[in-house]
Image 1 (tube, rainbow, N blue to C red):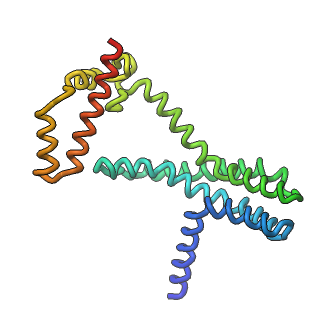
Image 2 (image 1 turned 90 degrees about the vertical axis):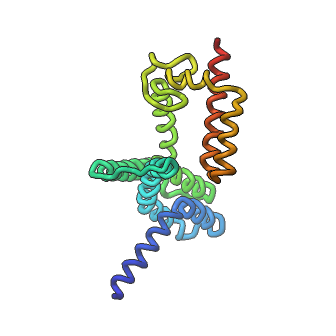
Length: 228
């Protein structure tokens, strides 16, 4: 029983460390350098960030890769299909995050591991922090690049990939183009329906979606008409 409790306790501590590692690995070393310059603890902290940093990066890199997928599924009322491919992809993301983090930290931290001044120590920890978590910092850039490349082939409204030749001048597919032009600036029937959904059916989320849809349609209608 004691063995199980110790395992659970260590697992909880490990999870808490990984969860708060981005703050711990930056704040604690800088505080030690500031209040205890030249102390032997600085060397120990350098070793610890080199050893545990890549593991913390792997944990957060996996969360950063997969969280948007689960968030989108929960927002749209769907679910994420898991299987062998899903787990293999997750393992690949973990391996990539660990290898890139370890290589970056070795490249940045090793040449100036033994530095003397307080300013150099602080700069070393800051540079090391960005090196350790470099895969996470590069992830938004990669997503933006993918979005730009995919956006050239996908409708800007419904996000369906239909090919660049099937998009109009503002980037809408044919159904979205027609739907935008058909939207009325003042639609009393639609407004009455939204009012009924909100106050009679008591579904504020649905009414909000309908209202948002009208705003989107009118926005794209004005963009289409501005080019004519």
